[in-house]
Length: 240
Image (cartoon, rainbow, N blue to C red; front, top):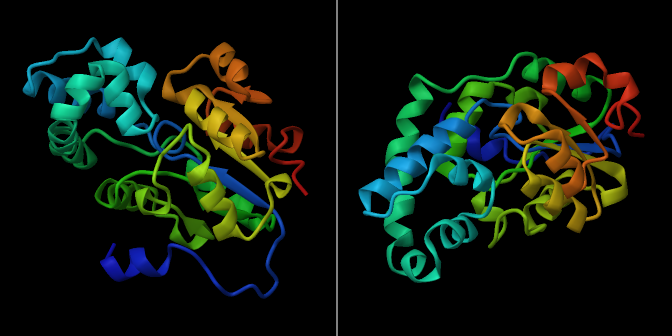
């Protein structure tokens, strides 16, 4: 994928025959099996700076705004002093996973294509840095099904702050009542809820159905393949 392709497909402006509904998707742990690669990268990054953290604690924080993640796992003082270095080390350890360890979840692209066929605007609602986002988009290879994509450039603070979700709504040109979000983390549920968007959870990122429901999911599926299989009975399939 070239840089020009990335830039040109961030959002569409042609509104002819435009649908009036949108389905917003988180990527990591929802469409791409990448959460455990993030856990591995953060674990190595924390070890690099001399502040190791147990993997289960890191996993609980995956998907949260990185500043909040660092403060929660390292404490405010260490996060302030070493946070930027930890982020750099995380990227250095994570990006090589794109060539070997990351894969798109089964039927993820089929789900996006089907939602586009039904007339919904499909938006990738992520705060991933541009370099990581490029890797994920290359893996997904669904540019034709996407109405828009957000990134870390679209909000000052990532989930659970609603900024990314609101940015996705703005790019889709719809109100919160006209959208549903699909995500794998409690941070997705909380961000969507704060933006007034109905949220559907998937367990593929490693978070339990109970935790997703408690955070605001109106329904929880094992993964996007299960959601596609049961689409007509889901709030996503009933969106109109």
